[in-house]
Length: 407
Image 1 (cartoon, rainbow, N blue to C red):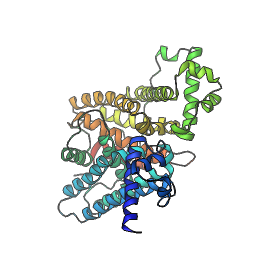
Image 2 (cartoon, helix red, strand yellow):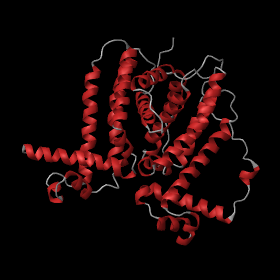
Image 3 (cartoon, one colour):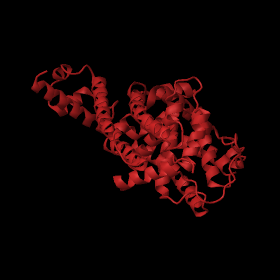
Image 4 (cartoon, rainbow, N blue to C red):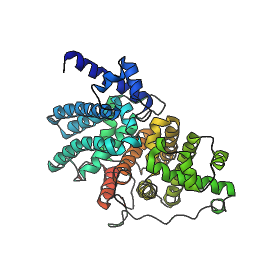
């Protein structure tokens, strides 16, 4: 290829990257890419077959830059703590710098073709890193794949736009490294679950009488539409799901849909809030029986994954909303964080949870739990997906005590 051809190809990639950032993958078009690039459609097809090829090349380019830096850091000398901080810095800086691209990866059109492979490539590097350090006796011998996806999730959630000023990169790296090295367990005495009972959870408290009252006809119809939307959107994603298919699945007329929702966007917002309230209710009905915040973390995590396993299709909506309706996705994450922050703060005051910046801690725990759920449940193609027991046990160990070897 000539120098001019290489320059044109590079310009197309740059323009496409910006279009994807602005409109997402599904909402982008070759005509918009060529318009911004200042070339004809015919010129575009001299270099790329379609926009999928462009996106795949962008993904490869972003990954190759990460891997080039990772190779340099592999040779880092010094203490384990220094190597850990450098490993965290690499991923956190990469995630922050390329967050617009990572947000696009939440679109359902890309999940099976790009997203899973992208994160697996990054996880592979961290699996190797944590495996080497465990073999050298520098950390607990926990599942390295679990640790890798935990770290991916933590870095992702701290790169989200929460509508406020971000912590500096340096301080964020220090906090993340400290958390995964030492965990969250505080100095207060704790009656731990006996061996073999770490994954047991209490029975749920009965629902309040108001929650158990029969629904009105309108409420029944609304919930039927939500359940149908969960299935249809789970199959097709937000962009490709259409209202007529949802109403057929729900067994209601198209006109009935518009009695309850003004548009598909209104439905998505209502569905996300409905699922959020159902999930928080299920978690709270069991967590309320715990007396120590460490038990609340343990029980809450297990109940969340039980809920996710039953609603795995709809959970694809949450990351997809980050590109399509950022206000809805931000509402979802902030609503989850509100209760989390309050519970963690109370745990710190009792000495059950180690003194850490509480907002930082809440977002970290949300991130690692979220990405483990994506990896082993949402992205899992098995008929009955679930998180292996040893992964759950290792997660609890990491969350409570961190990676530092037992003294």
